[in-house]
Length: 282
Image (cartoon, rainbow, N blue to C red; front, side, top):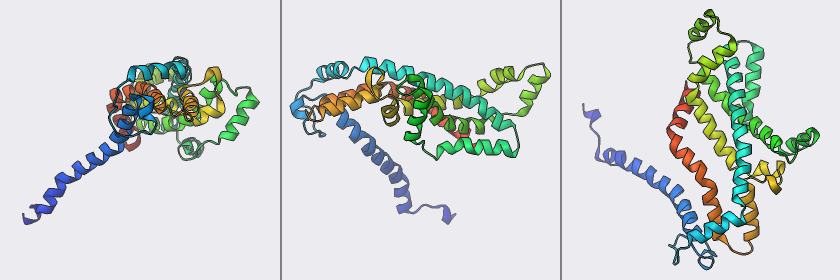
């Protein structure tokens, strides 16, 4: 019994440890977030050197209006949507089909193919090779080329989580459907896909978060112009405003660009956790 009695130090640490973690999280997330929000509401004179001080004069409406117009955010939003949405659909459809095969088939060739497929989780794609291949295919500076890049980049993550989840689905469900005369496509559509909803939700959100904020590959593949996505628009605004010290406009652009993904994450954060644990742990 004496071993179960907590010492005063252990009792204090028991409550201090969660408080310390919350404090560190608040500093790591809250301080940068407040810097962005506060600076985006300041006039130019106060935003020359971004700091954590409250705005002496609040003008968020004017700053956000200028960021929307000068940054061409409406066009950037449409371009991002036209690239991210098809990429998500392709990642989900191709990932689910491939994961079903990897989860149900056995053999050295299947195992080698699975290992090769999920190697994309560890090996970043070479941007120079990607650009050269797209030019050979005539897809450079096009939305289909950007969609193909995002699909290839995030397909490994989708297959990894979905394969682990499908392996937990009883095989008897599929066998019963086949005995009733269901075709493989019908089994996949009526049994596998509905059961994959938690992982599909996770993959959807993860791909959207990554692709929505990507600027590196978009810069080399799209290169700006009429097809520029929101991150490319931010790069353009930041580059132009850097010498003008208009940080209030840069941070206003950041806030507006982040709002859609913040809303998606807050709404579906539970699905992200459940999908990751279902696909990776099981």
